[in-house]
Image (tube, rainbow, N blue to C red):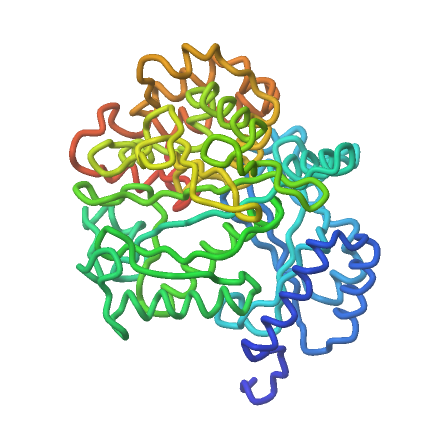
Length: 476
């Protein structure tokens, strides 16, 4: 059948942006989910040019899974979609494999056809257990339940914005082929801001930014980063679950755009030794009744006591949650003080080696920046850990916090040990999910050399959770 006979939905970027911004506004204003559901179902029914709905969910490590449902089937069966959870690493054992996918109607996106295909729309899913509640290993569901509970009980709104760095390398599947090639090839040897119009890196950034804009990201700035072939595309803050969703979409967009250009977008934290690695600086704030609770014009660094208590809890549990923020063997290459790495357990307005930075802000923008975060993190686990730790964690005695310098672990084995020993991580995740996550990280660590050395090893890339390959894992 020729393409001229197909009549699939393909909207101009301007129309996409209008649709996505309207959906984003509904989400921010907390329009009742029943109203949004009714509106979306009517839209899907009436729009004949849509052929499929892409339902997205993430596993325990943050790996994205996408299922396409025929539009007509989806409209009829959206409330009873089952899948085999035992096929998803970190979810269920075979004996408890049946799980269901719910639909988060507020997290609905229109995307350009070159990203997901013509005639499709995207919606995020929620993993539901047999009892009909949120599945405890689905960190998106856990984050959403936590944020919703805080809003309903105390009127708190959790906000976040992530600054996601990555690299662009020559060729498709550069990570997959690293086992044979042993190297990544730059597309640009410029550095911070040093990329001329229409060179390969600039074209990649421009195209990715265009897609993000069309998907309602409300872009702020984009630019090459410090290392050669490195990039960062910044956008505005959102409510915490929407912010985590945007991290997943951001990486999906970058990978898809790169592939169309015969390139690879990589979010390995340190793919090349000798240049700066990639981070994901995470900016957070808490609001109540439209007021930013982190702001105090008379406070230290113009931050409130509420904000400083939040900081102290993060620093007190920094070693406990380090593995949740830096989830791979390769991530610990980035925590190298020679490359502006934020490996010190302290807060500062100026020292970029600090785990927490206090950016210059005002009543609207006052926030904390958690810098010791790798871009391969599960964004839902990251934000759940940061906010719950900052709001509920313990605070060490002041002499422990402000005394002798303390540092984050410099390898995954030490991070695993600290994570497993910590009472706080058991309270945070529960014993079952904590052990599942630790087992996954242990398996990744054991397939790599214990000492990092000065060369990125093929096993760091080969068994990196974002370039996961079922065939490779089944060989062990």
